[in-house]
Length: 166
Image (cartoon, rainbow, N blue to C red; front, top):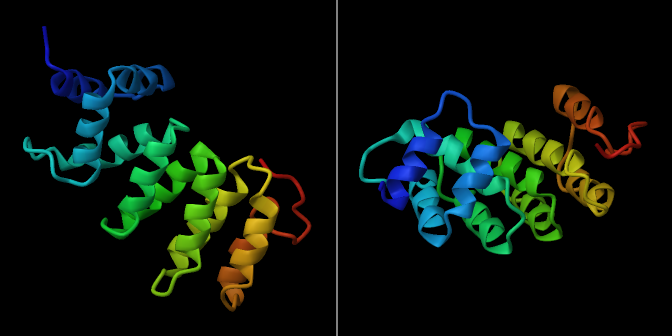
């Protein structure tokens, strides 16, 4: 019988990771979550860095508050591509805590324009009832011009005529 980390590795290594696969990984329990966190942080001993984004995605498929905290913590420790993946995963969760984490990150100093737009998109597509207010606060946190303004205005709920939250 394979160990929990071996089972997680097998599921993460699949050609296509389905929602059922994500649920199966999470159903394996705390040891599986700890394995996911190791992959997400790039600290897994087998050196499978290619599984980092998949591990972040799986954590985002859960609305568990502990997983929200883990994803929010990853925003400070990963490369930009992985921070963006964590933002998207938090948006997938759509919980109030996830939206607050995204907003806090998006309003921070040193956040690139790309990360800012992904933070806003993650809020706008979350389906969370607090999304419109969070987008308003995010919008007020920086001067938006040109392409950045156009990108922001295209986000559902941004207040630019896109009234629906996806």
